[in-house]
Length: 274
Ligand code: PAF
Image (cartoon, rainbow, N blue to C red; front, side, top):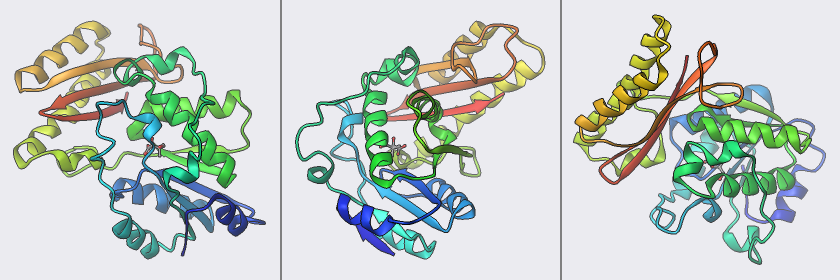
């Protein structure tokens, strides 16, 4: 496995490759990431994984400094999966000078996560575009766990005519339903058990809608109230139309409920398609 941290080196090592499948990550790999990588391996013999904790997508008060960095374990896991190339640049490589060119994003980047994490998607889109330019993949895999991110990357690729196919990967969950995330390790045992309630809440909303309820507002309010009663601080629980990611209105059909909520000092996000 090639572990490369330099732009020229990774370009050189991928020269002539015909079908590059790319999985961008911030490291601290868990089964959710590994599932995306296994999916990539089914689509290509040449899988590239990047590991880079991207400062541009963190607000000043967020967990950039304490975000778990576990490069050695990550590389062991990737080597066991026979990944061909790992790109692990440090900040000086990707930002030799301050990143002054930043993408301007559409309004969909200002709702949901974008409303609570100002500039988050601008940081994500900018780094993803840089990584696409460096790796030049034929396809790239993004997990549905970050549903809005997947939507925005798809839109960026479409509107900027980037020559890469975006493939989505399903969310991997614990037996209790908690979506796997690097941030789960901030939870203590009690919180970890409680954290499953977020997915259960999404499932209840889905059940109500499938049974014919179209009062999305009340469903959202009840869910927020229910979580708050169990100690959560909810940023949003919101039902949206899947294709546009705009707030759903009856009789919209293909829906997704997205949620972000705090359990203690840990912010969890999840979603469920309906
Ligand atoms: O989903 C993530 O881990 C990050 O947002 C990504 C896509 C690697 C960009 O930093």
